[in-house]
Length: 92
Image (cartoon, rainbow, N blue to C red; front, side, top):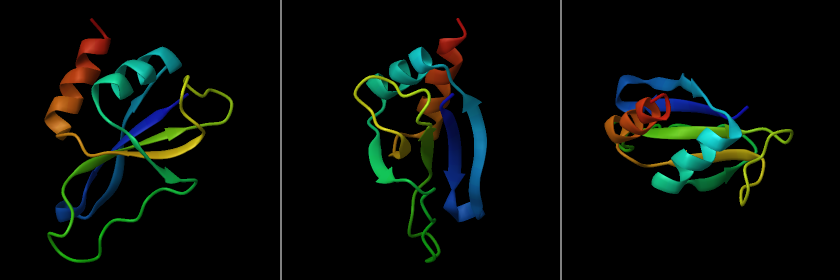
């Protein structure tokens, strides 16, 4: 199942698991928030203080890959508050 992590570099947060999504839920989130493929390893946070804004990381495993995406890690630069609202809407 795809996992979504919230990363907050200013708080030295390396990535906190925020949601475990079904493939359908993952497709809905990606349709609302642009995701950029960053490779097969969790992206590193910027070392420079204040250099990076908050972002989310989506991990897609090979066994459950949504249509149009490949396994690996994706960065979502959406505002985390808006992204969180999208996640809450999934349960309604």
